[in-house]
Image 1: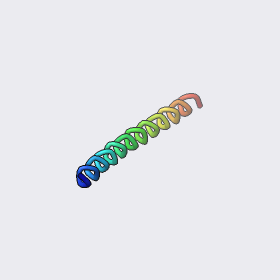
Image 2 (image 1 turned 120 degrees about the vertical axis):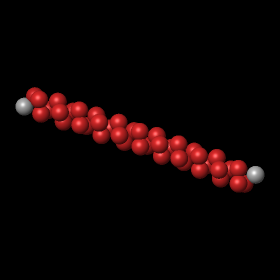
Image 3 (image 1 turned 60 degrees about the vertical axis):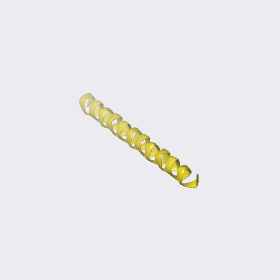
Image 4 (image 1 turned 135 degrees about the horizontal axis):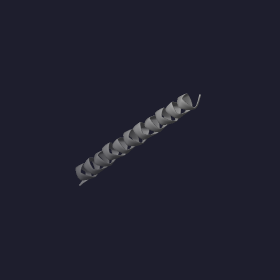
Length: 42
């Protein structure tokens, strides 16, 4: 029973990490897009 709990928590952790990575890459691409916009405006 306890091993089952640890397995599920580990899965939750990995999925959370994946979400974090997704969000991080999303923000970086948005930042790059805004930087490109400012370069074009100058």
